[in-house]
Amino acid sequence: MKKLMLSAVMMALTMTIFGQGYKPGDEAIDFRLKNVDDKMVSLADFPDAKGFIVIFSTNHCPYVVAYEDRMIELDKTFKPKGYPVIAINPNDPKAFPEDSFDNMKIRAKEKGFTFPYLFDETQEIAKTYGATRTPHVFLLKKEGGKYIVKYIGAIDDNYQDASAVKEKYVANAIADLEAGRPVKVQETKAIGCSIKWKK
Amino acid sequence: MNRFKIILLFFLLGWLPVTGQTVPEVNFSQFEPWLKKNNDTTYVINFWATWCKPCVEELPGFLKAAADLKNEKVKFIFVSLDFPTQKESRLLPFIEEHAMNEQVILLNDPASNQWIPKVDPQWSGAIPATLIYKGKNKRFHEGSLSYDELITIIKSK
Image (cartoon, rainbow over all chains, first blue to last red):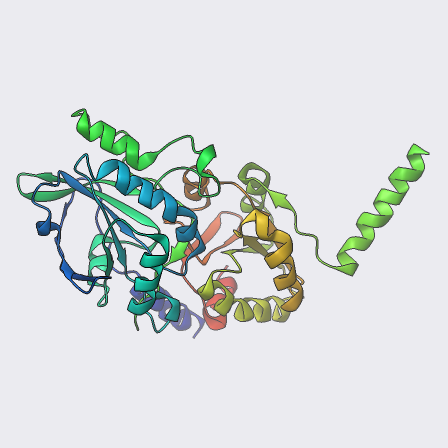
C-alpha cells in the first residue's frame, strides 16, 4: 500500500514537469503573440535583427520588478546593435490576477517599456522554450534563417543591486557573439518566481 | 564585568526563542552545513519567500506536517529568499502571523548561479522548491507539494 502511494506521488510529480525545453545550441521556434498595443508580434517581424533577448517576465514577481529597469537598459543598449528585447508573460491570470493582459498594459505604460511585452495565453511558448521562472532569459541568434539559442538564464549575477553586478551574463554573451567567439557562459541559474501553469 | 556581560548574553540568547523566532541571515557557505547533516534525522528544507504565492499556499501543509511529526526524527527548515531589506517589514511579521515555530533562515546570497546547483543540479531556481534528505538518501522537488505528497516522501526516507 505504501509502495503504491509512493508510486502515485512519483507519477504526479513527474507529470508536473513539462518536457525539458531548449538547451544552448537548439533551434527555437518563432511565435505570434499579442503585444500590449493589441498588435500581434513575431520574431519574423524584425528582418534586420541579428538576434533577440527573449525574457519570460510577469507583472507580479518581485524578482522581475528588481530587473525591470535593467530590462529597459538592455533594450536601449542592444536594440541598436541588432538584439532587441522581447518580453513574454506566460502566467495564468487565474492564478495571478495581477498578471492579466490589462495589467500588462498598465505595467508597460507605468515603466515605459521600450520593447514588446507579449501575452503567452496558451503557455505554449513558455513550455516549448522550457521557461520555468521569471525573469528567465533566452538569447537567440539568427543563423541561416533559424533562431539558435545561445544563452539561457539570468540577466546578470546580482538581483539585489545593479551597481554590485560583477558578471553581466547577457551582455557578455552578446559580446562573444559579436566577436565571433563561442559564448563562454551559456547557462546560469537564478532564483525566480515559478511560472504558474494552467491546470 | 566581562563575565557579567557574557552571562547576560547567554541569558538573552536563551530567552529569545521563547519570546519569538530569531531569523539568522546567512550567506550560502554559512547555510550549506544544513544540506549535509549525516545522522538519522530526516531534513525537510523548503525554499520559499513571503512574496511567492505558491510558496505561501503550500505552507499550511508543511506546518501541519511539522506539527504531526513533531515527535519523530524530522527537522523542518524554512529557507526564506525574501529581500533582506524586507526582513523587518515583511518576513518577521509573516512568521508571527502564521505562528511559524519551525526554524526560518534568511538566505542572503545574490550569487545564486554559484549556489543553486549545490542544493540540487536539477533546480532551475524557481520557488517553491524542497529538498528532503536523510543521510545520503535525497529527494529534490521543484514546485509545490501537498501535505499528502510531503508526508509520503518523508515516510519513504
